[in-house]
Length: 63
Image (cartoon, rainbow, N blue to C red; front, side, top):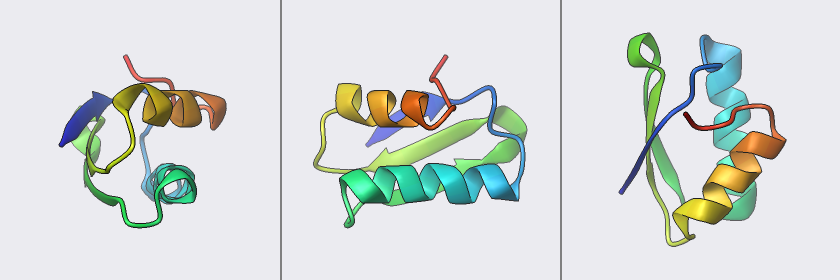
């Protein structure tokens, strides 16, 4: 389980964008969001660094 804080994630559209980016890398990934704290918990076989890189490229760099 990877827990990341994405300060720029603030709404439902952001959730969809983050989900799409991670699932492009790992279609089997599952994500759980906590918008008030800007946290996302990701269950994936992919390395954390790769997930962070994909999210940063999508405009959601991890803090």
